[in-house]
Image (cartoon, rainbow, N blue to C red; front, side):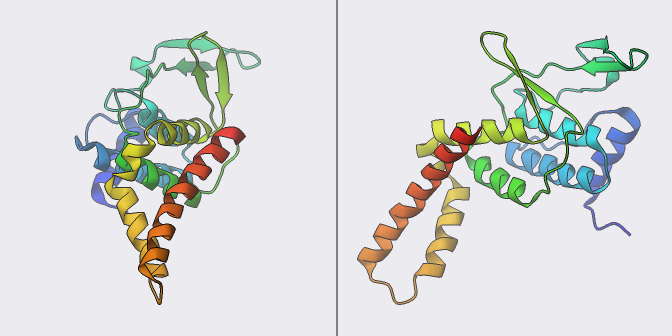
Length: 204
């Protein structure tokens, strides 16, 4: 017996039989992002790297609802040494529609809990100079999430997800603290988040 929500299981089966999601992703961007993160975890648990790749690609795409089955790929390559095996190439254009301010902290929280896997797939970043960088699983989205956090930092601080983190952190700190100390500590939370952004971008 699987403890998996019906909507997630439906998407999982679609991927297995069709190669991509035909329908079922929520039109609400926050819920859609949550579905894709849940599917990524499920795909990792059941050793389905193609679904992991689809989830990450959709989260990076400006159109997370487009079909990316074999019939809809950009082109097919035959690469050595297994030239008999075709490889589908997909092109996803940014900026991401799902990586909005209110989703960023929840995505980071999810990625911290996901066990890092070996290079079962690769996503290639192409910059304005058309130079490509190969990324391991979750490396591309991690880079984009931290960069988005940095560029939209003020908006993130006003988001519901940050407010939730702020309140839970303050609740743990409230015991026997003066109001001046609490105000200072509240500022420190934002500073620590900014420091994490900078550290992560330097590493990437």
